[in-house]
Length: 415
Image (cartoon, rainbow, N blue to C red; front, side, top):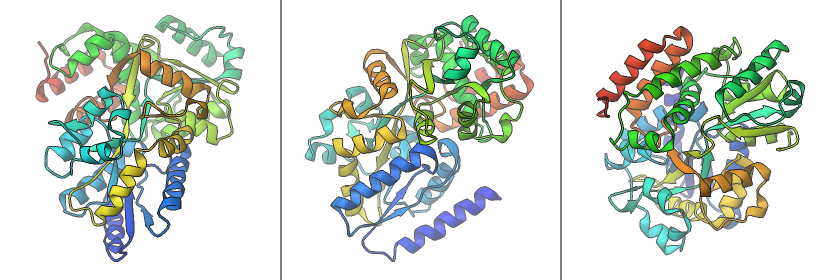
């Protein structure tokens, strides 16, 4: 019922926008923490250049776009698109919107502004289909990061950041014995459990084999994936008992409030911690999830141009604006992400984001499942459901069988 009401409200709001001639409806799921602040900073900067354009912020709350994607799909299929919308680079973009013919190509736009060759080639590839670009990458996030409370780390005797599972589990155990939650989890919106599992899977498979899964060059019937489930089971012994009632922000806040030692989350959590008043490297530290030190789990937010956008010319202005260095250097330091453009001003970024920039340019790039880059929505949704059942039942053998069934149903190798 709640999701139906959200969809109905969004549709009513969108219909009222048609009455505003010089409007620009921007659809996203950025409604909290550093992400909302970053979006509003973009709006302010855009209006300095286009003061007469009325921006309609059509953001729909829900971590990782859980609710927003349902609303957006309803609108797009119903012929009622926003002027531009947030979409993850990769399969979420191409499989859901480009292949069904719902988007305009914007290669010309990037080339006209001189921005086309200012993005990494690999990133341009995953926002393209049959040689045409379909969205502007605004940022790059790293998903496989553990953020920790430095004060608690000192209390439990952590002298160096862990690089192996035994080291990591030892620190989680020490934190638990001292009365802290070892690793905070907030899976009220379900996606965070898969977010954790996919990074463990990456650690066990290694970046080369992980990437081959999505190309049909490696099989899901791999003991490393079963081992990843066993490791997840070990980690779940150290999560908070109320995890199913919390969002990712709530879990991150537990680290800030000194209730939990760490939280494994994408680096949007870094932006959130900064909005709470913490300084990176002073109040909190970070490390790649053990076993993933040589990999960068990619999440990229992009904006595209729907066919029949009600205010198409304004949408084009918005997309050209997003492709600029100024826009990206305004948004990303607040959001807790790094710019998609390779010529951004590194001096504007904090110590964490510089670390992320360096790893992005030197580590193996691996697409995220739950954040839309690696696999179709059908696969990601089915796997998310299986992992959420696993969090409760913790049956390694049964869940491994389910993963094989899901992979087979979606055309991936299981032999």
